[in-house]
Image (tube, rainbow, N blue to C red; front, side, top):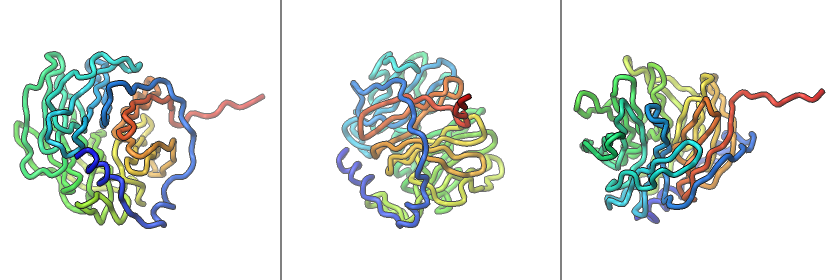
Length: 305
């Protein structure tokens, strides 16, 4: 199944004109630390603000759709020390990770798993009826959980012990990445003209946002950018975003202009960005590796006298 999923996620087709519109140049980032031992298809890296620890979802051997119980969450420090590789186990294919008031929420194919961080155990499993392929997950200040369904082009919300559809339709461009930023939910589209057979699209996805109260949609990037996965605020009004299929990490500024930061092998997934430490922590799903890079957006090069 793992090989099948990888095949599904490696055979996309899109027009040459769209490929040419993607960012082409930018700096290669400085590697600070890297971890690979014990990692198997790492998907999402997230630093819990309450504890300061880094939590990493790992899909394991069975692939992104495998209901096989071999997925897990790892616990690390932000300087790359593994505290416990298999911190919480018995998941299927965990992907998006976020927390709220001591509870870690994880998307797991067709369910949301709630983990008590202090107790280090699963305390609740929330089934998402009709879910096809749950992917990224976000939480707001009130504890509402938002989770994307890439294949169904939907976003679900879990609020007051109930699951409902927050938004749906092709205008979402088959959302992968989601991030709550102020009064908006920022969404990264996989693309339009989506094929359930091989996850290919005819057109690349854009970065958009939805007002959490009015549900009004606004394009952040007017033009298609990539098969968008991870989204993190850069601390300067823009976002750092990954393109899973094309192996790209780039910054989108507050005007919606994308700049390529670094090329990777295919499979660069849902990263974390620590503004205070100027660290981007990137899971490379296909490579079985987690790497931290030094980056400060808008940093000027020193001038010579």
